[in-house]
Image 1: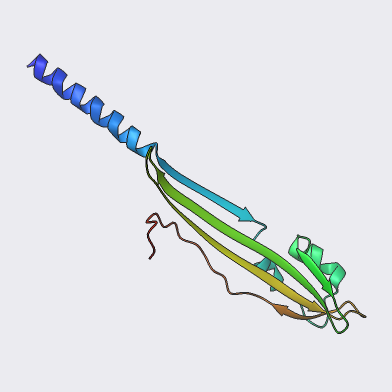
Image 2 (image 1 turned 45 degrees about the vertical axis):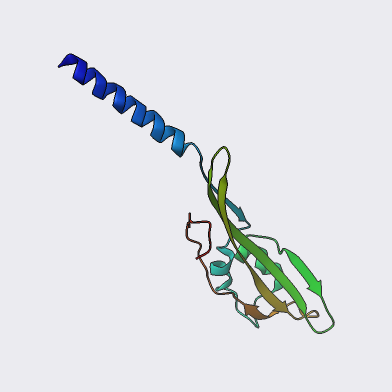
Amino acid sequence: MAQMKNMFCRFGMICIVGVFALLSGCMWGRVKVNDPSVVDSARSIKPGSTHISELENILKVQPTFRMPGKDMTLLGYTYSDTKNNGLMLIAVNFMRSTTVTDTLYIEADPVTQIVRKVHIPPKRTLEWRFWPFGD
């Protein structure tokens, strides 16, 4: 009886080691560039009354780009979210990387520095998808 119990214990240990060996090849990672909550903060901008100098206090970030023009100044606030996951084995690797990038655009009058329009992109979220071979 003790020999049978010892055999089951060894088999259980071999199974646990096997599971850990397989799981060690799994990889998950996430990279966020800038804060996507800038879109939520942008909803409090009032076109026609908000001044460009107030945007930093409202959005809590600096613009990614600023394009001065004759008729308008365009400010852009770019953000992205990338999710990576895969199975890393000795001979074969399966990986999937999904990225969503958007930009919040703000148009302002170049003379008065008053915001004219706010172009808020639709909110998109990424799901973790492990299967690397398409949808």
